[in-house]
Length: 216
Image (cartoon, rainbow, N blue to C red; front, side, top):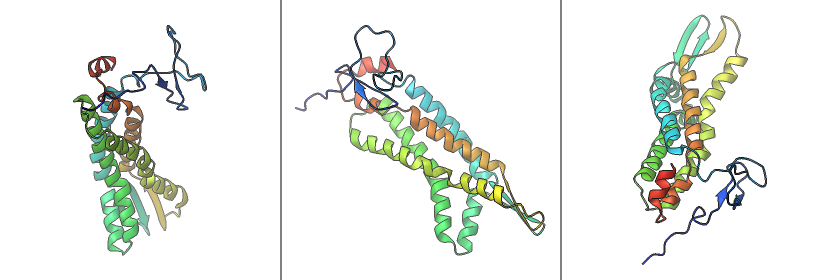
């Protein structure tokens, strides 16, 4: 028979969201502050699940226009070409630049979609009180945090090109509406990963599931 999991919450310990210090707050304190950085302490991120769902739904709504609308307008010798993320990757692939095409596809199409799918999986697993493979789910969460920064590759490239290429009728690059939607997807998925509290994964392993659900 497996031993019950003892969590930090069950021992009355709280980790600081800012500096990571684990401390035991004094009993009866009205406002809990971190003893090291003086940031407010919360046993769990307030409204973690509802806020994460809100950011994910908004990101999913922006994902389609981000991929269907032009992300960049390129004018060369009076002729304009508009590219979406997909057509830009196809253009690079057709001209033999498959490494760049692969980077654009992975960073701009695959990573945001994978992040949304992983966070949805984590949210559902917490809400239905899944207890299996908590370390694997924690690794998935850390993966979303790690790859999130690379989702801005397209926006960064478009921003640099728009700032540098101003040659009148010879060559000029303008950002398209798709870049705005794509930046919104990236920001919203990063906020979703930020507001999700991975400690909720471990709460399902304790025998205090019902009281934990009430705290949310």
